[in-house]
Structures are given as structure tokens and as C-alpha cells.
Length: 214
Image (cartoon, rainbow, N blue to C red):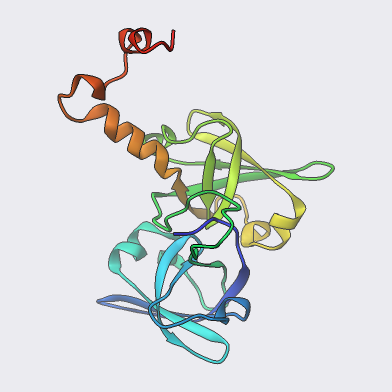
């Protein structure tokens, strides 16, 4: 589990594909502190298990599913990635609950600079857009962000200079693919409301009236 608060930007030093997926080596410094084999690290929003630790790097093995579903499909040596270690029981939840499970790829549309922040606009599939709501939370390449506006399958997030400068968001160009994880809470609510024959599993006007909401 993660918060979407990026701790460090790392650099891919090795990336080797095989029939079993791929192995990635990421150069970094900050997150190596107290990092152990088997720990989880969010790499551009993808939860990865540490399989080897070097003096200035760690390695992870990517499954074929991860390669197919994320921006790792086009990863290159020298590319930069956002890094975050997994939560501990005493961590502050500074962003929102992020699982590190990428739901889909989105597309970066444009960046607009204002006095003290940037508006970044993205597009995602129609199927995933139902989980994106105004003022809700979303993780883009592992960065926890708040949705400023939503129109169909296009949305905008407001990014402060600190977040932009300390993540890979500043490197995005129009048309770039990004890893998107929508808010998990929305998916649980949808599941609860759409499954089973329990009369209380579906919300209606009558249900709201009976329970004092109207």
C-alpha cells in the first residue's frame, strides 16, 4: 500500500525483456534506506517486489501482465521513474490510498502554467472514466493528485511547482502514455451496489427516503 507521495526520482540503468517478462534495475539513493529483499516499491505507480539490492540500485522482475498494462512496455535505459516505498503502520497518509495496481494507460494532452501552479490535462478510456470524479483522487505515474475538472473521459489536475519539479511530471510531452490508478473506493462502492440479490445492495430514491436521506 502507498500514498502517492513520491520520495525520489530514480533512473533505469538496466532493462532486459525475456519470455518470462522483464528485469529492471533502478538507480536511486533515498529509498535504499532500510530497504530489504521482498519489500514493495512503487515504480511509476506500479507495485514491484525488490529481488536484489545494490550499492546504489535495486532490481525487480516484471510479469508479462505488468509489461502489457503499463508504460514499462516502452521503458528505456536512462528513463526516469517515480519511486515510493510501501507504507508502514506509523506513516502519515499524505496523499490517498494507492495500491500500486495500474488500472489503465492514459494519455497526456497538455500543460498550462499559471502564477503558482500548473494544470495538466489527460485522457483515459471511456470505461475507466466512470471512476474519475471532480475533486476526487487519482494516481498518475504513482503521484497522488486531486482532480480539478472532469469532462467525459478528459480530466485536469492542478499541480504545485514542488510536485512537478520533484517527479517525472515535468518531463511529460503531449501524447505520452501514463500509468493511471483510479480511487479504489469507487470500485468497491460499484461492486457493492451492483451485485447480489440483497434488497439493500441497491440504492434508490425509495431507499434514501426510508433511511432519512431525503
